[in-house]
Length: 94
Image 1 (cartoon, helix red, strand yellow):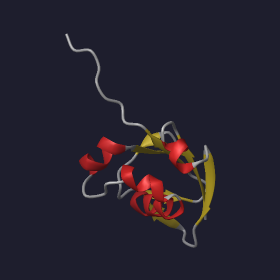
Image 2 (image 1 turned 180 degrees about the vertical axis):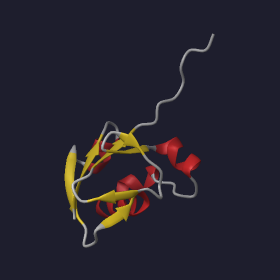
Image 3 (image 1 turned 90 degrees about the vertical axis):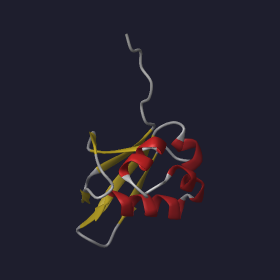
Image 4 (image 1 turned 60 degrees about the vertical axis):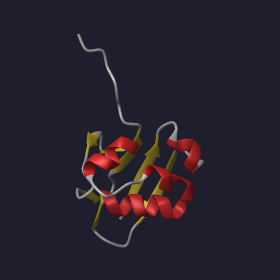
């Protein structure tokens, strides 16, 4: 299977690319496994990956598959587009 991984700022600076393709010899994989592949290819990305829990991971980065925010255990399939995004924080409370 082939998937596209797209990096938003600041992650593209650490990855050194905006987008790249990963070829995986399975019919599906998980978000957590894709993060392992990303760190394997770009060791500088390890500072953003914390798979100890969903909450811990979302403090560092958010993963969206086909424009839908996903969990570490969610499956990714051939042709999916994976986006590595900066978490949205803050806001204005009244």
